Length: 360
Image (tube, rainbow, N blue to C red; front, top):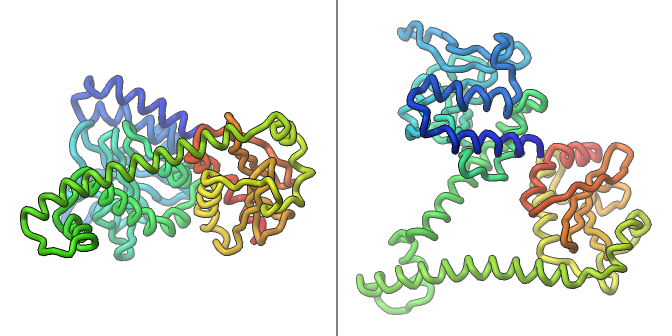
């Protein structure tokens, strides 16, 4: 949660000051150095942690400099190349990153303009930086799904192997989301033909394709609105079902562990199932997905390992106006943390994976 607050603070700074920044050096001072220090947690003034203007001769290229090299465990782990705020970022801007990545021990490289941060690794070929990023962060449009992965690169929780192992999925999920988003906004002809061929038996003339372009756009918009409305209805329904007696029973949740989800009166909501899948997606990096189960009770929605009440991962308290996630410590004592949405569950990725790891 702390890192999200810091990201929001830096986001506000970018909004307020971006128009005043005219050079790459000013971008580094105003935005990139605070990102390295406040978000990633490295001391930008300690040469044992951060080397600015890092020099590493590559072949016939002598004296070239990379903007920042971040050191962890006495090895260069992250390379950062900076551009001026507002400048578009593409693979042509990363030529020095490509060269330096090959000759250093770094597994992660970052291309940034102070607002957008693109993270690269070597998924396609060992020791060769990929041309496409596996992760992107836009400070003016923060995706909460990025935050748990960003945490793995911070000084206090640096886990390059974990993030590299997850990078493949992150890379493709990011690209698929962009494709889906683009189809919602402006469906491609190939996509429209696919949809039309599933519902229209006639010949797909130009006039028919134009008709189905309009119909596809309309259908996509209505489908998205339907999903939003269903979520709202479920949330309203869940809140209405909560009674004072149920609220009081929350205080005695520890006594309810033996209640199974099939008990009369227990209603498993779509939000609880979605929360279960979010937790499952987080901890599957440390424990087999098939071992993750859940039990629903009137007081809470419990997520367990091996369907065993003695192996709790967390509890979700969603059927009330203020939602909570219950995190367990090493003594299996639950501490509840308020959440505003299901996406906030991602902010607890680290304690969730630590708890799950204990049941390996």
